[in-house]
Length: 144
Image (cartoon, rainbow, N blue to C red; front, side):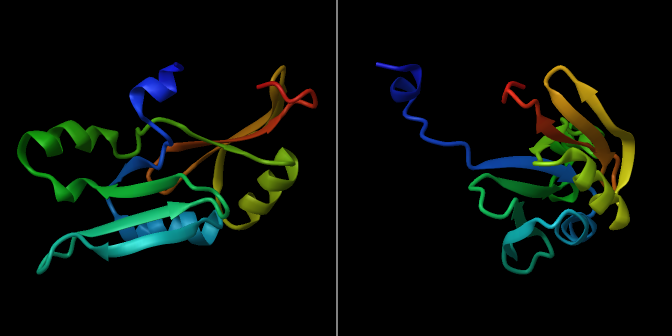
């Protein structure tokens, strides 16, 4: 039996991105990067808190835009340092140079221009809060 079968885990469905401003994050990821809004619903009645998820069109994994303001006390203290410091998100692109130019034209700020590596061509951008986003065109042999 494989490790996957033994754990009963069938898929990764969501990753969280801790943000200060959900609406600004939603606008950035949908308008500048072209992601699709998957869900946008109230967390609980009478609250301004929202469950917002976005995703790359055609992909099953969703990014939950997790507002740091949902939490208080120790949980907020633990999560607040993640705003702008989340783990890097990496996205595959067919043509790194073309993606770089198109995203730059939409106002996306880049930390690095496309550069060639052994594993492919990469460019690094940042979102509205400073989280780094890697755009990677795998090498011709498909290795990363």
